[in-house]
Image (cartoon, rainbow, N blue to C red; front, side, top):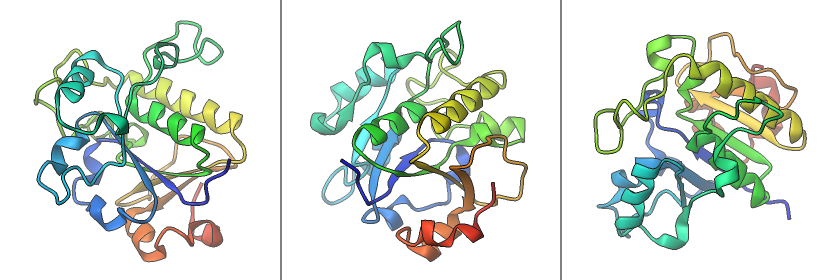
Length: 212
């Protein structure tokens, strides 16, 4: 069943650090990744966001399962989906929670995916591997993204876009004036400000404001 409301896929790159996710709380379904839940322990009600929390790495998965975040909103993808498919990369490298969150949103029928904090698409190398939670529990060097991971993640995302031509993939950044490294007729960029101005529901009616 198709879902008309958009799904917000929230990565933890530092490009979203000044964006208030509460401003889009009621605009769609939010799929957060890993430690995002830590930021909403003091809301009323508690853990008002994210609506769903996706994780694949053992350390953060155990942390989430031991927390009081509602278990019915935690998604641990099947083991098979925690690795990129062989058709994309025969070596089957580890996937990432953000990409898996997008897959989960599509399973639920969402056709508009809006990505925030997906910095592996940024050209600046330091920015591209940035993470809001660097240096905190379960964010050590063993789980940290490397610049060499970026190309693989881009390739995987591009493949997912081609496999799902009826889904719109919209990547939002503070400033979208850079050469976008993902190609596809259903893949777009916009600014975070544009999301707020358009109130999300109008996004696909204003595609002339997007850049590929």
